[in-house]
Image (cartoon, rainbow, N blue to C red):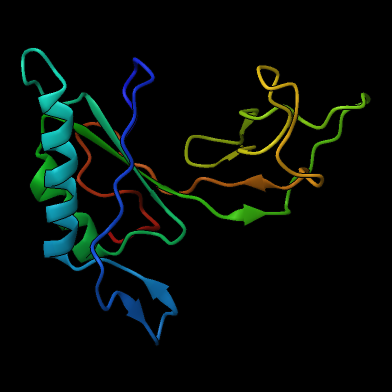
Length: 159
C-alpha cells in the first residue's frame, strides 16, 4: 500500500494452499482475500488523522482475480472505496527503443484503450542515474480494472 505522501507498506497474502493445479495459478480464498484487504485498510486508516478510508485501492497480481477472491476484497473494502484490479504480466508485445545511450525511462506508460495499457516498471531512473537491468525493452501489461460504482473488475474478468 502506498500513500499519496510517498509513504508505503507492502502486504502479501497469507501462506496457504493457494496453487490450483488445474489452472496453474495462485488465488486466495474469499476469506483470505477479505482478511488481507481488512489488514491493509486498517493500516491505512491508522495513518490518517481522521481514520478515513481511501478513495481508491489498487489490487495487483500476476494472475487475474477469480470471482471468490474478488468478492472477499469487496466485502472488506466496501462501496465507499473504488477498487481497481490490475493484472501485471511480462509482455514482449510492445517494445520501445530510444536514440540515446540510456534505456526507456521507468514509469513510461502507453494507454492503448480504456481497459488496456502498457507500463514500463524497469528502466532508466534519473534520480539514481542508472537502471536496474541491462535488457529493459519489455513492458508490463496491466489488465482488468473496476471503476467506482462497478462491482466486477471487467467483462473478461471473474464477472
